[in-house]
Length: 431
Image 1 (cartoon, helix red, strand yellow):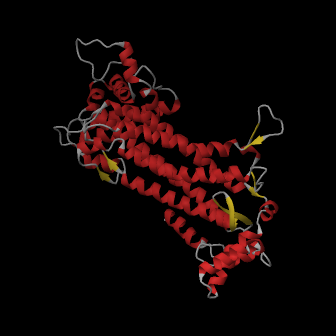
Image 2 (cartoon, rainbow, N blue to C red):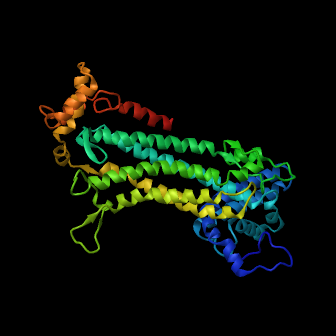
């Protein structure tokens, strides 16, 4: 391992203790390494602006940071156990190439604000992906909702309840994912604060050019208080996990529907073959494993958020406990986004079985229509309700799923889906 940034003369390091302290941190830092380099370039520019380094040193450092970025992408530089973490790897590389200029790169910085700013940049990037995936899901749902509606039983308590349609089903998830996309964008705006220059949480005795680094890194605002910068670690990560969880919660319920609809008992939906797998022992089986793992993905994200939350039982100021939040964050976000990425194609290519859905519409499912029609004609609703309940088995006489849906004129219902309103909300995300 390279020399420790914090090594003091006369103090020996114990290998077992160092292994425990480092854990998987250096491996996890591979995910954040390029963001750390980007932030380091902005910091170097800020140091030059206040005269701590010369213009030549700034250019040399920026050049070597660019070379390091290229080497890392190409696999010529490997971030591994030779380094304590990504931050020390950057400083070691710059020192190796530039001597004293490399040793100056850490001036006015702490590993605390280094990890904060690199993570913050990474989170912004992932929230943009979350918005993109949610937008894509909503778009597919709206396209399919606009296709001719097929009758689909509507369920409450997992019991057949009223006539619904495939268009209503898709419209419901379209609106959910429009909201999820908006939440991703709003969360991105909320965390869009630059912590670089807050050092270990108390500032430094240098007039750091934080306005420059805020602009250079594309942040919407400066995170002013150094103490709050430390308090926000974990808090901001949880906000991102909550936005992701919102999308995965809708995914879980959608996947539950598909898990039921693809059973032989329902037989409402057929999935593309590549979204199913064979049984290891039963030759006749094709299993909806992708759908089941989509359903389970919420648990992974929720568990990651919970672990971060449990780490935050801390006083103000930095505590080493927060190191463990990095693995939870990486696992939860990367898994959640990979799950959402699969949804648009799955939803675009799944096929409805109209015959099975139409056969599942029972006469009693029109009883609500009968009761409301009687109420509209002047019968007190509770009287109409009781009469319809007593004659529920006859409620379907002379009725079809299409007539029931056509009569459903309340805004958002079968005859008035308001897809144009939903499309405008989605399009507003792109403007």
